Length: 67
Image (tube, rainbow, N blue to C red; front, side):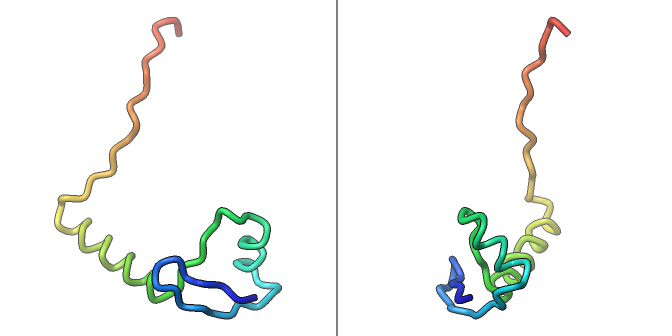
């Protein structure tokens, strides 16, 4: 199976019977990202975590007064 990275547009080949290929075939919304792009994003995210300026905001939940 030929797949294309959504970030760098590099075309790679996956085996037809691997789990990642099956997920891409069955769920078209899943996008493929090559390992170099994945590693680069992971490294940059870890750098941002270490600076202390990285915040994950939880969605505000409405409080139900009837419960």
